[in-house]
Amino acid sequence: MSDYFIYYCISMKHFIYFSLLLVLSSCDFSNEKPRSTTFWIDNPLETPITISIDGKKHEIAANSQLLLELKSGRHSLDYNNEQINFVVKPNDQQVIMNPTLSNYVFYNEIYSEIGKNAEEEVERAYKAYLYDYYLPSGDTVKVPFKLVSDFFIGRYNYYWHLNPTEPFPNTAKINKGGSNLSTAPQSKIFREHDFYSYIGEELAAEFRFPKNETKLSDLKPFEFMPDSLHFDCAPAEKVLQLKRAQFDSLQTADHSEMRALYNRFSNQKDMSNVRNECSPSDNKSLDPNSNYGDLEKVMSNRVSELSENSAFIVK
Image (cartoon, rainbow, N blue to C red):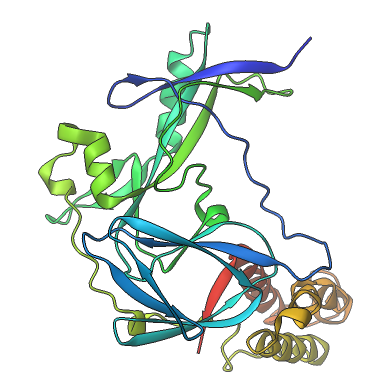
């Protein structure tokens, strides 16, 4: 028997039929070949913009985009008399680049399997995709969308299925596998004005988003581990210094070196190998007040955070 089912979406504003696309893999690719990443460089403004990538100028028309493949390694972008440097990781996840730092909106619709009465399941699913929104009055409300103005809007970071110009399609088959759920989410990144058009009159006046006043020069580089942090256990401190040196190498590596360097940096076995020497939970003879556990968690989280990004800002 086939495990494929037709799903439809019950929209928050009206009944519409949508398709569910396959969820992208969140893993880094293990292929050792150097990789390039396709950047969707977007201009949601009503006027054209001119940017430079690595010194080459590109004009992007109003409400348009430039698809540009960038090799892994270090790059620079110039826009509006400001420059930002960034490193592209060795992967092929699609990324929206937002040089104007404009507002975008991440929005979910919930699919329901045709022929199934799934009202309660749909309601639970909607509640799972609510986000905090801060009103001008200072009050916080739950809303089914999330305001985004990041320089990089990665597909993995927000799990969006549809980019700014892809409309919600009508219907599709999906592989249900062993799941007994009759609902599934579908997500999209909207340009701000397109989101207003999609929602229409249902968007109250207090949800008209304020302009993002952040400039490219305000953006902070990704910081792996502050220099002020140190392990009180020598073997762990040695691993920390190694990881700092590896991260520094990532910021200057060329395309041919990037995959191997990133694999070494993201490999967390180095820290696992010193647990017995440094972790009080593994070795009861150690000082229970050691800072190993806290700092190991911080470092692991920073490595994981970097793994979730297709590119990151550097000095």
